[in-house]
Length: 136
Image (cartoon, rainbow, N blue to C red; front, side):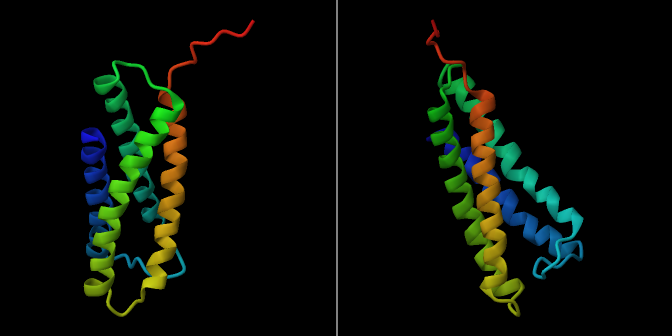
């Protein structure tokens, strides 16, 4: 759980800060069109989950990781990161972008959820060890 907490904190804080960085750079995060620079934010959960799961496999499990263990650990990381990023996002919506409502932000949260689940599946598949069972 220690690994999931550390990786989730990093993902959550970086994702939350991304909102403020985009605002500081002059990009609005609430409209129907997505600027190309916003796609860089997809790399935060992908890289964070992959590195967090790799550290979990190498340090905690001695290099052995099953798909299910990887998926559960990835979802723990994403849950912690999502709660933190969601909390920072609510603060952002209420105090920085007060003229926009939460509906605009909820679409972005759903997209982040989808990216997170896909990255959890991909990282688990990439980092798992092959099954020890042989097929006769």
